[in-house]
Structures are given as structure tokens and as C-alpha cells.
Image 1 (cartoon, rainbow, N blue to C red):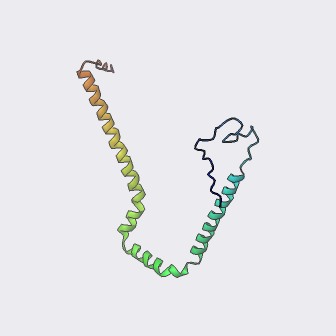
Image 2: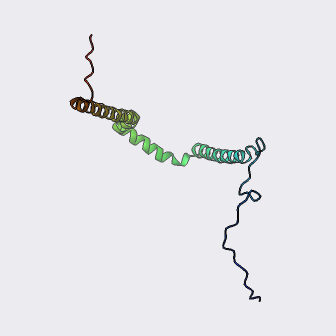
Image 3: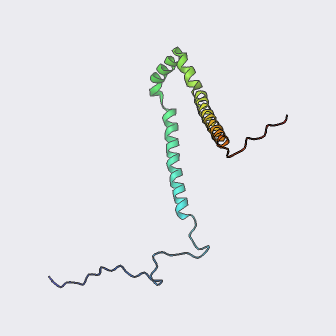
Length: 132
């Protein structure tokens, strides 16, 4: 066993033009789409397997018929729930529209207050009344 001590280099290696940390390909020489096509094919294969599994699962899902029959009967006996489920997208869109309308009203009121404040301070003259 050798007990020789090797000198340690604590300096960072000098970076010069002869030892680049990256390679730049000339225009038109970069390999085109090999990795991209590989991922495309792999992801399409995965999605195809999932689609086939869903199709087979639904096509041969006779075992869940009693549960589906129970759900169907329950929905038929509760028309209010069925109506709520049918109108929930409409309700959601109306709620979003109401929220946007509230925001527009608040913005308009804030602009009117700011204009009134500027007018009261004499910074801006009142807009001329329309003749008509």
C-alpha cells in the first residue's frame, strides 16, 4: 500500500475555446425529430392501450348492471336531482357571467369615482354635454 500523497487541485479547470462545454451544430445538421417521434409513438401506444381497455371494460361490463340499474331507478325516482344535473352547466355559466358583470360594475364605479375626484380637485374639466 502506497502512502504517497497526490497533490490536490482545488482550482476550477480553465475554460477555453479548445474545450467547450457545449456543442453547436451547424445549420441544417441537427438530427430531426428522432426523440420527438419516439415520444409521440410511445404516448400514442399508451393512449391506445387505455382506449382499448376502456372499450373492453365497458363492452364486457355486465357485472355492474345491478349497480347501474339501481342508479337508474334512483335517478328516475328523484327528478329534482336529474334536473339539477342537467342544468348545472347552465347554472355554472350564469354564475361566471354574473361574476364578470359584478367586476365590470365595480370597475365602472371606480372609474366614475376617480373622474369625480379629479374633477373636484380641478385637475380635469368636466366633459362637455352632448348636444343632442
